[in-house]
Length: 454
Image (cartoon, rainbow, N blue to C red; front, side, top):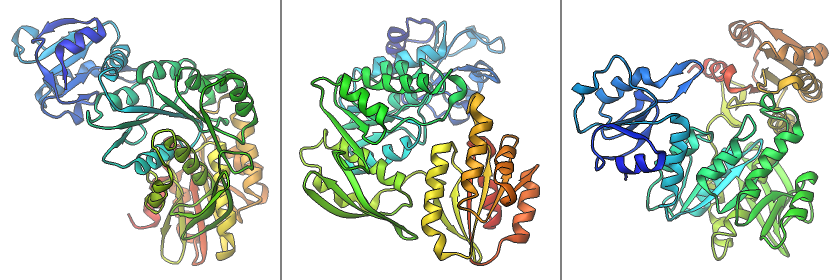
């Protein structure tokens, strides 16, 4: 439980109203989700100002608010003394400072996860392997400078493990997140072109991701197959414990004989001289890699990792990540959660594996956002590669037009999702496999739901 005194001590804020002994059940930044007893954090962004909703939060039952200024629509002299108001220069920084303060009181061991793809899945896998009653992870993908601190602040006190994914779209975010959550074990899943808009180069993005390792005093888990990361770890690790994962011989936790079917992904886990035949109830080699990373991290946390393999059949990821859905005669691979070139490649590999069981393989592809100056080239490359896998490629979105053009005769561009949906309804046939993917901003799940009658 966090008290007003904790908030003042952690942030250096000024108490404008209330009492130092007032305690809060949760910390929340969304006035629409406030529950009685919460502390409301009034964050500011380019298109919103949380100070406009302080009164709504108090009326919903908030027992306190963290603010940068006092809203004009509230008379502070009429405010009940049982509601604490703490003023700080910067509420986003104060949120992180409060989480860092709270982190020092938590007894659970913290695992930090970063990388271009697979953070949420690896987090879900690791919390399942360790036991949901003992391990806590970020809700959904709360992995940025807002979500990660909130995840930490609202973590159960009794959790033995806290598994936190950490994301970035500009320099400095990973070091700040590592400063807040202070991970004892770091997992780096790999670095690929994604969220490049905020970085001057891929090399700068790589340095940003590697900073999680440099700020983690304990063991490192890293991808054996990414040469620049492997070379960096071999050079920088010294006596620090490390474990690698990958599909290549030489990885500490490796996989071989991978087979993708509609029922899941079968493979052999290889650790030293031991071999374990397993099946993931998910589709794709990338999920196998995420599992290997999670298991490698778990091996630092438990005395014997082998009993954890009994949980493999229970492993799940978040919705709309290569989720198989059956329509009237056709099948949809719903991969609409998000998109970047690496995750698109992973999706195409799954389609290639499943392709023999279908009459046609079709793709609906939307914009891949935040790729910066490289966006057009990466969309063109994606279109050319997709044309080698799919019979037809239907693209929607301003940036995806380059993808459709690069797909040649197989590519078709649509100016709107509505026009694309109408065409899909006319042309989808029994025996088709339809793959749907785009960045979160494209909301292509709307097409999937409409086709399935949702």
